[in-house]
Image (tube, rainbow, N blue to C red; front, side, top):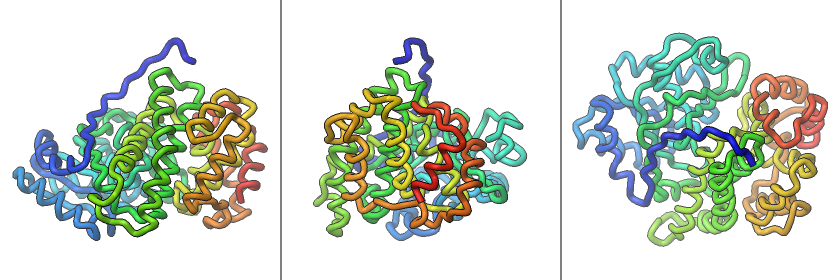
Length: 387
């Protein structure tokens, strides 16, 4: 355990079923003309976009909608959104959607206040310390982007997938309403739920995990272990009405997801995310499914480096000790219909060399923070095993 550390995370979390109703009043504290950043489909299909617009207008805000954010958001999309925000004179950003939408929203808020290519800031070529005020409303319980300063983007040409990390993009308020999560299809829930679990596991395993982060990460693992399958089964059964669903379980997983975002803010991610980002940067695969392909392979090669911690993870997920930890994770993936390989997700054998090199370019910190620091050859073998 670290005995000396700094812990700074100024998040404003507004949590609970029905809290979406506070969107207008919260946003009005920070501006008078809001840009809603969202995707092209889900918030329109569920009626949430219209509802959010009405809540903002009720408080006297003008509303501009930017509905171009995509899964694994591109840097060019964020730059387009920032240009619209500046042209329209928007003074507050509302991110409405899943993790990719929230990351794009953060990047839009940042790029609207800092000139030039956003990847210059990601790679430290330029420095920025301001952004438009940001309100986040997650509709998936996976990335935890509402609880940290990260905005993961993919550079269009190089396919580098890497995080903008700046406290300027920590949301002024994040409204986490578990009722919004219930609209996810079962397959999306499985993917994002496993992403949330990975955040908590990786932060706990990180070499720079501090005692506050450790407590939070372990509670996130426990909450997901006790509740994710319950809500997944509800979605598999076609349940759609929150009043008939186990909202205590939905709240638990939603909270765990936020915890996951908070703990990686402090401890970072480790090898599973570090190796997944090149795969989804190259082939635009679903992030949670990429993690499902890689995590068991990586952890099998890591247990000897941190047996005590893997024993704790196993017990949080219903297992016994470090020896069955990977089997417990694989059983969870089976129950979530999430067992997969990189090749099934669209990665080719010919991609392995590029991904190996790229991992050390975009994920050096995560690779170093992992309990076992893998060599380039070991990373290459992990990718080949995960194909």
